[in-house]
Image 1 (tube, helix red, strand yellow):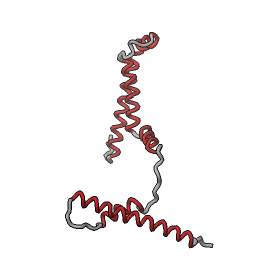
Image 2 (image 1 turned 120 degrees about the vertical axis):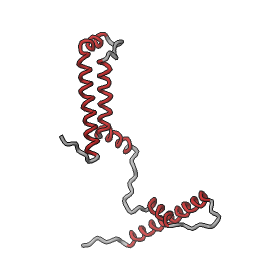
Image 3 (image 1 turned 180 degrees about the horizontal axis):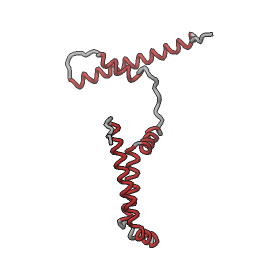
Image 4 (image 1 turned 60 degrees about the horizontal axis):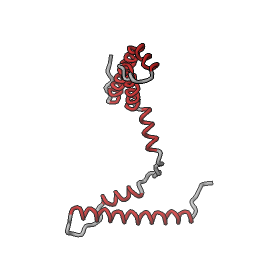
Length: 154
């Protein structure tokens, strides 16, 4: 059996669309009025197609409109940070910058055990920082080349 729309539902949809039509008309008038004030035209201006299209796009764009959840921007930021080359490179730069700082004696006034460990392993901290800094730069360079479609051939 085919699915049909009840007459009451059709009336409800028509009523809602008439409200949206009124909002679109009011917004079109508002945009035309604002443009007239900005251009200081002395003649009476009419609503232009651009005003109507902008209003339609604001109130009835022809695609599903979803409300943004307040956490979506935060979630998107962390997703970008941990999954993009830029984000991973930034995190690694900070981590290995700390290794380099430790290796060059940035913890001279810390706990005696830590200072002793750094003295014994100074070269190792610096080597680790250099290796991973090179890897980060190499990965970022490779990503930049591939994102522009110019894969370097070896």
